[in-house]
Length: 168
Image (cartoon, rainbow, N blue to C red; front, side, top):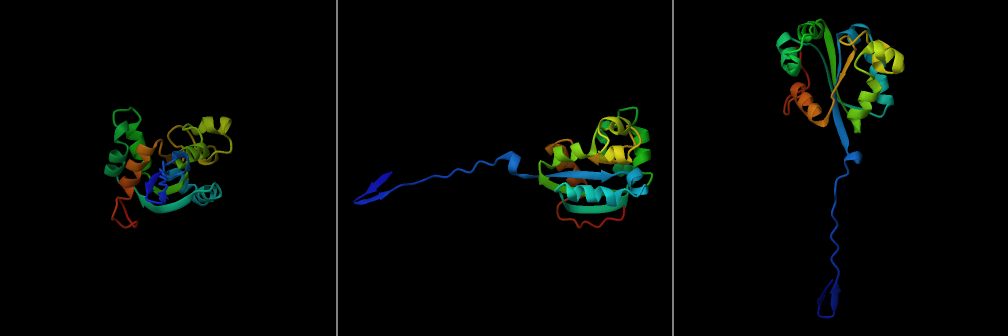
């Protein structure tokens, strides 16, 4: 409080501290070739919308080998990498950017365990239980952290580009 002659002025400083739990997050979703070829995209979109997500961007494309090897570079030294590349280039995929509060964790809960065989037992109502086959052919991808989501979204949707791609 400050005095200016007869006038008393009270200064109130309001500091806004962002609360992470109340901010929208974005996550990248890939409906993999088995999800697209198995005609699960409509069901998956319905689950997404019914779960409170908004779809910020989407595109359907057939991934080229160099795109898959770049996107999954962190797995390049693992034994399953060649089969992953073959699988992800085997047909069209649907790529979406989802947004909502707690998007990353909520999406990962919806999709269930990475191994679709396990998901069918432990999370029978999950997306991977619905349309996945096994550890690799698990129907969908979801970002696992804020850092991964930012990297993955910018990989497919670089700033300043249009969202229409024929093939990457």
